[in-house]
Length: 186
Image 1 (cartoon, rainbow, N blue to C red):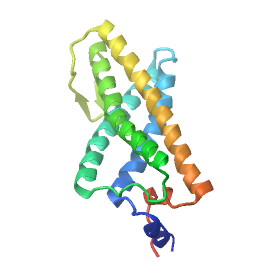
Image 2: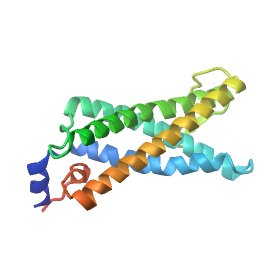
Image 3: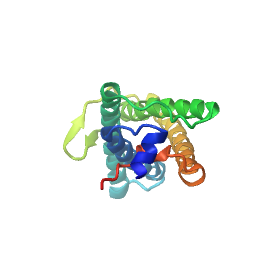
Image 4: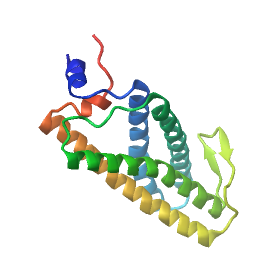
């Protein structure tokens, strides 16, 4: 019944995009506070563990963003929901485009800054990414500062995105959010 109502008001996203969306959402919502907290800790095992976790999640987000772009190119995505006002459609498209840009910019800046700092990026304890820049600590400070700034921008856009989704789900009840929820069977 809910799927029929959503289809009547707007197409659903392909299942692969739904899975990638929610997986990336969880990873981003976990790694942003880790990133904010890890620099405030005293050097030691906990700080090291958080840096490794943060970097592993960042690399995973970057890989999933590449996969998400490929799925979107080959499977497509539905057009904006027909019930959106023109200003909502414009804001929605702008936020989505900025999110996609930041899915790439934030982890690449982190990789570049970490490389310039001279620290390894060990991904989930399985392999080490090669550095993409030579060691240069002053450059590292700039890159990691930009990484933090863009990560904060990403966090702000996530808040805006979640607020919009909740507005459509709880107030408008227009099926916009349901397009990105896992489909119910039965």
